[in-house]
Image (cartoon, rainbow, N blue to C red; front, side, top):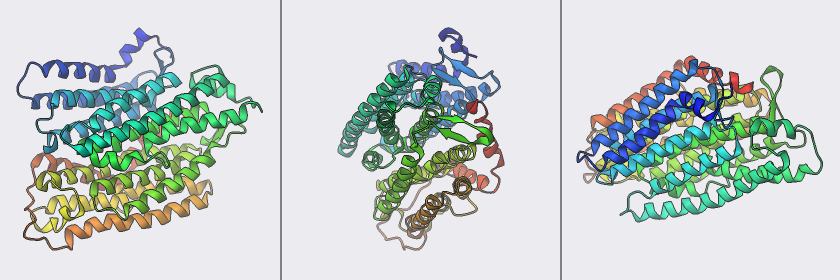
Length: 493
């Protein structure tokens, strides 16, 4: 199925819901005085987009907008995931005191616009569409990062984000132009077909082009050495925005990266195995990036006292873990990536939700804000945070352990022993700083000056749901792994 632009609108309901909600919120902001309604409308739009994405699973799969965008299980999986990521960000924003009286109409408009861009990042099958989607998400993210105008730290973070993003974007579009010159097409599938024929003249140029494009992808997923923006942006942005960047924006980057490298620079073989274009061994480059990314992220997190910044380096480390599934060139590796991205949603968003509760209560986000949390009225948030920390560390019986199990299984099956050993050592290192937060909550005695924790039902219920999900998918993960498997069926074709 390859539909024209007009015919494609019938299969673009998730995006249309977000677009109409974005325009509607912008208009209603001028007419109503009770601004909370805008957030509730954004919440309904994200839920509607998730439902519309799920309903697309029964549609005939193929291409939309003259083969610019894919409609397949892979795109539907990520649209559902990205809808839920935006839902979580909006829900957290409704309970965040940071964002009180901070122009909610503009804020939710930008957040839904960014979510719409991530949908096209995940489904783009054309270099031009991929670049436009990435730039659209980046531009809205810059504004969201510095949205709190009175925050000097946020303004500085937004400026750094803009500078790093501009450089990465320039490198990426130049690499894409080289690939277009070599293949004579912007379409991923056509590029893959034409580059299958090896050419000595194209070898060095193609490698340079791929390296430049990787700079754009690496910046989006916080892969070393394109990670420098992450700690400052995560620390300076409003906490719901930080949570969204760490889950939704990063997942869209991985989806776009998988499509490009697997469709344009690889081809599917028998038995769920993929092969790269002859003479272009890009997995070796990604293996090195994976090792350095997880190692730097974990080592840098050891010295952090600001929990927001600690979770930023943790996010970098987890990008390294996810890349393990990317480099094995097999369906098992892709399945492990999708499963881990889904479980990462639960445990990372949960950690940020508890951090937001602490921030709302004490106006602090450092390690001392968690001191004796379990004994000063925060027993439930402390228990939820312990679940999220141990899951992020990969401790059973939580979902993070199952996610890492599938990643390690895919790597070991390919006999990539060095990568598996480095990842195992990094998991041990990460346990130190995750357990440090748990120790601070339970073993450090609170001071008289530490405020009593008051748990609001809004954030407490959300943290509880995420904690239960983290535990459930740690003991019964079959439905989620089946969903990941189904999303790859048409993708291979």
